[in-house]
Image 1 (spheres, rainbow, N blue to C red):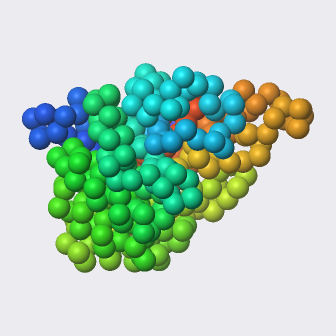
Image 2 (tube, one colour; image 1 turned 180 degrees about the horizontal axis):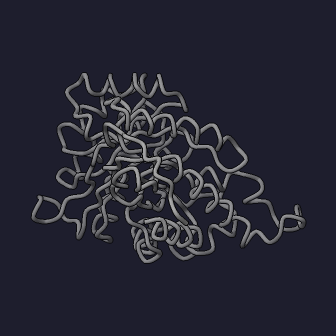
Amino acid sequence: MEIPNVAEKWTSSVNEITIGATKEEGGTREKTVTIGGSKCIPFMDFDGSKGHKPVIAMDVYDISPDDWPETLKKPFADVLDNPAQWAKKCVEYGADLICLKLEGIHPDKGNKSAAETVDVAKSILAAVGVPLIIWGCEHDEKDNEILPKVSQALKGENCLIGVVTQDNYKTLTVTCLADGHSIITLSPVDINIAKQVNILVSEMDFPLKRIVMFQTTGALGYGMEYTYSIQERERIAALTGDKLMAMPVICDVGHEAWRAKEAKSDDKDAPQWGPREERGPMWETITATSLLQSGVDIIRMNHPKAVAAVKKCIDRLY
């Protein structure tokens, strides 16, 4: 197909951020991951450089998830009680990063201590060579207690840690600044709040070029259009020179996609939808590939089939 000569003239680009640190850089990772750098609308390379490829982070929980359907548990059945082995399996499935989700520190889901959590993080660090994302339980008091201890234990590894909000950002911002990590800023699908959180974090002398933005993700059929439109507007703002919108973006696709009833319902409850073994991974895949078009740099995912399909899609687009 011949592409018409209607190239846009973008004046700016998305920030580049490197996650992870090799031995030469003071860490222990076998490789690092660099995201961002785009100077065009996603995949429209006739307008400018596409920047770095979007990457996939696979989730590993610090406790065995009790709300996952059997379809999702099956590929990890023998490792769900062992986060380090779970992480190794994710790398075998193609994960570019591991996202350690600290579900078990939540007061209502285990109330794990800082010492237990640090041990889990260190075990994953020893088990895999890819960079790490550390994601709190989003309970402010518990995150402020646990995340600084994990950050200190992983000092020098250049992790990506989050999330911070406009009501709870000071403790983790200071911690990541001291320990050399990058940070995730959360806003509930709202550009103005996203800017406000980035301003608050930067006013504490945290570099804008070490921030990754997270808009609350909606899955296919459950608000994905809203998430898409906000992220698309943010990406266009970045390309037109808004420094407070120039951060790379992370999406929580796996968790949100598998919350949808179409993905997790038993076959007997909805036979007209087809087998869940195929339906669930497809729901996650379609959510991820759709949001890629809005401008996403890191996609958090769960099912190996979906990961393989999305990585293939990214490779073809690049």
